[in-house]
Structure formats: C-alpha cells, structure tokens
Image 1: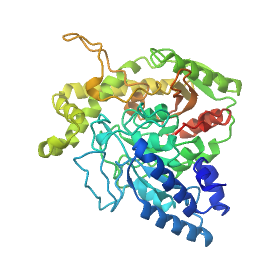
Image 2 (image 1 turned 180 degrees about the vertical axis):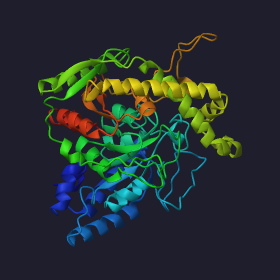
Image 3 (image 1 turned 120 degrees about the horizontal axis):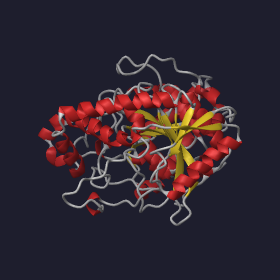
Image 4 (image 1 turned 90 degrees about the horizontal axis):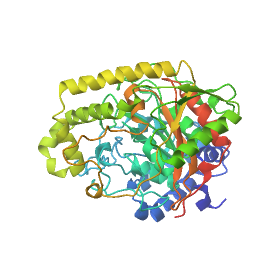
Length: 472
C-alpha cells in the first residue's frame, strides 16, 4: 500500500497493520504529516504541527513494538487534540490572541493517557476562541469544511471535524459544552462522542463551563471512538467530578447485533423544524436498524425545548466567572463575539441561573423516564453545514422591540444539561449541490456508552456513509 493511501484506513485497520508490523509508525506518521502540509493551507485545521515530536514518538513506538512491548490499540497511531487541552512544553492557544503564546508546564489527563497508550501527537487543532467564539474573528481564523471550503465545519471543535473529514489525522479529541463535538461531527460527517459527564477527566482542559464541559473522542469510525474512550476514561483524582464507575470493555459492544435493542423515538421537539433531508435520513437510519432486529418505542421529553435556553444561561454565567480576570486585564484581545457574550453574562441574575438549574433537574428526571422504556434514543444529528460567514453578516428575522424566539440549541444541549451521553454518526448526504453530510444521534442513560457503541457500530457496519471522501 502506498504511503499516501495509508491515511484513508481507519484507526482500527492501521492498528492491526502496526501490530502485525506490516507498516511502521514512522511511515504512517510521515504520511499524515505530508497530508497536513498539503491541505492545511486550504483548511486551516491545525494551529500547531508538532513534526519533530511526532516523529520522535513514532520512532519510540516502532522501537518498543519491535521489542515486543506493544501497548494496545492506539500504540503508534497518530492523533491531534483540540488546542484547548494543555500539552506540556507545547503551545496551547485556546484559539485566542489572549493566550496565543501560552506554553503549559503541565499535561492534561486526556493527552497524558493517550501518550501512555503510545499514541503519536501530530499537532494541535483549531477551534472557536475559548470554545465559544465566532470562528471568523478568533485568533487564528476559521477552519474550513473539507466537503466545501465555503462552508463551516461547525464548532467549537472545528479543526477536529475538518482534520478528520480531510484524513489529516485518524483520531482527535474535542470538547463539548453544548454540542461542540457533535456539531462538527454533523457538519463534517464524522463520528463524535460526548460521553457521560464524569466519565473522562477535564483536568488540563481550559474551562468554558464547569458543570457542562466534556472532552471526548472524535474519529472516522465507531470502533475508533470506542478504542479512544477505553484509554481516556476513568477516575482522575485531579478532577473531583470524575466518576469511580468501572470502565467496561467497550469492544464487546462492537458486534453488529441489535436484535432486541429498543430505540426510543421522541414524539415532540427533536424532529420538529428539522431540515427535511436530515429528518428523512434519520428516519431511514432508524428503519435500517429495525430491519436488523431492533424495535422502536415512542418516548417524550416534555421540557426538551428549554434545554438550549437554560443551558446557554448556565454556560455563559460560568464562563463569565472563569474569564473575569482576563476580561479585566486584556479585553481588547478577545474575539468581539466572545467579549460581548461574556460581558452580557455579567448581567445574568442569580435567580436566572437557579431557574436554569431547576430546568436541568426537570430534564434529568424526564430523561430518566425515557430510558425506562428504551436502550437508546434516536434523534437527528443536526442540520447540514451552513455557509461560513462573519457574524456581522448574519441575518435575523427578529424585529427591533419584539421578543426573540427561544434559543433552540439543536438536539445537543440536553446532553450537557443532563450529563447523558450521545454519539453522532453519518447517515447520508444532501441531494442538492454542494453535497454535505447528514447524521443521526443516539442518546443512552448515564455510563451506558456500551449501548451507544452497539447501535452506532451496527448501523455503520451495514452502510458505507463513513467511507465517503470529500474531493480536495
């Protein structure tokens, strides 16, 4: 296999070749570095490329594997995290001019665990500033969608979505406070997992909102997401919010068998006002699983429509608190959109915040009742990608003096507000040009990522949407 073709293999396939010594971690790493060099000027997915570090780590992996010290499924595999995870001695910008020169003297737990697994660090990926910026006014300019460079890869893990869709890395880590893993997964046609709150440590991940933040896998395939979660999951004494819940063997869920799996289909909210093609593709994906032996049941989350508005209040109030000192010291360096959001959040009242927390409790109760009836809940993964436009050109239908509509927040914010896990996977493409990915999302009860992987892997195995490539 030619080196330039290696990049189109899944992480699982590459791991098998590395273990069997059919390919070297060094040649694989170089193949990805070559592709980054060729495509990053067009896509702006990477902020920093750690070429020397990557090649040194790849050589060490090659040496260890030759000596019989194979560490597992990620050994010798390249990856790239969102540039909001601290990497010791390596630039960590948060996508912002405020921290454009920050080189941490410590390592995030996630990247530390990946390093221990033998994964190879290719570099750090672009994002919306501090995971909430405009994407166009942030410190390093926007990442672009490989399916059409005039379109957004979504955010805030924009570089992760773009790099994966363009085969510039086989594995990535994103963060998700209201949909920042699952949005880019939807726009870019990749796999994005927001696992259960507390399943993965947030130590060394720059905070957006303490009670909503997650760091999780972004990959090209479900099996690769399971392999990454296997490595990064588990209690961390440096993050008191992490759970001591045992970490299961996620590979056991990758059977392709969904006989008896109960799929909840929401009666309200989640399918309302969706893009028609997204709606159609999601329902077709559910039907495919039914044909494979799953069953469907009607479910309802009566107050789901409030998840976005309440989640936004929680996120911005906590973000304003976290960034208070920076706002005082360096206000002029912030993306104007970020600064506006943080300054506005200072005027949120304590009662607004407490009401939002009350909504959270109601949503948690309602989601618990949903999963008394089903194993997973299926929802549209999101709308097709939108044009990449600066915020000042965005149009609004709200007339001056009138009440703004409730913030929808997509189908993602409910996962952050309740802590319930969701995986988003490809399930089709739009028919009109430009051809853009469509996705389906599956929710499960807390710490039941096994059922997410079960449903998602079965559907992926029966289809080939994840194998489609953008023309670059």
